[in-house]
Every structure is written in C-alpha cells, then in structure tokens.
Length: 152
Image (tube, rainbow, N blue to C red; front, side, top):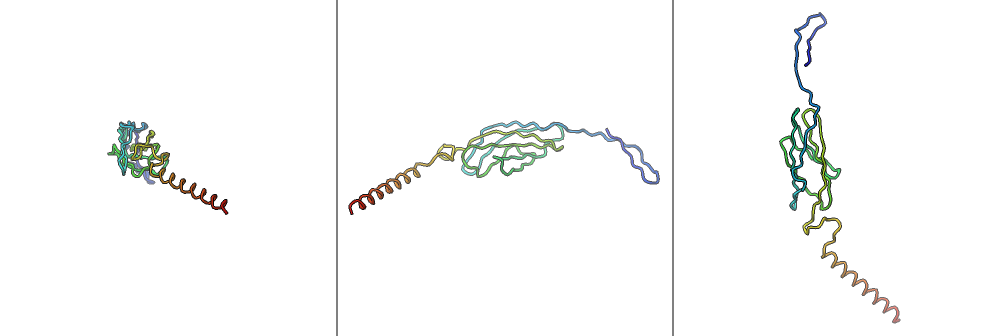
C-alpha cells in the first residue's frame, strides 16, 4: 500500500489517500506442447502453452537460429516460421508479461527436405548423374588429346 497527498506552495493540502497495488516479480511459465515442428512446403508450425498468474501475458517473441525475431500477441499459442531451409535449427521462444518480466525456452529441431533428408549435406541423384557424365566426357577428351599428341 502506498499513501500520498498533494501540497501546493501556499501550504494547502488535500486529504491523505492510499492505494494498494501488487508488484509482479514472477516470470511467465512456458510449456512447449510439441517439440516437433510440423512443416509443409512453405512454412512450419510450432505450438506452446503459457500462463502468467501475476500481471498477465503481454506478448511472445520467436527467434530462429539467432536471426530476426517474430512478434506474437498474448492470445497466440502457435507460431508460423516461413521459408526455413532444411537442416538443423534452434528455436528460442520468449514470453513477456505485462510487468516486463520474461522467460525464454529453446529447443532444437530438424527440417527434412522433400526426400526426407536433412538438407544441406545430401546431393540429389540427378546432380550426381550429371557430374558423372561430365567426368566421363572430361576423361574421354583427355585420352583423345593424349592419343593425338602421341600420334604426331
């Protein structure tokens, strides 16, 4: 409880008033519902639950791989991550309450490419075939040049 009054330079005072208020020192609580991120060809969805028994939830922020954060209002319990490359990623979810308290949780996940591979390390079959054909042609050209040079 706080008590206060006002007084001007002439000495006039008003009655003492009091006001009670709560100070929220507790951070929100986050629970990741599904640590698996569900993806389609354009975006990925993740789900969470969060509550704050003090001042209430203000907003959430999602950060992926130390990149730019995405802002979500307090009514959200899902987030959409767009245009992420296949491979390993880390998601950081931060909940902020109305008193400015925050808590961050993180988890790792993997986005598989269309073939079920965790992209970035797998060369597709067509590329390997093309490289093999180019290599065979290069070897054949070298053999022909050597043969022609020796024939002279």
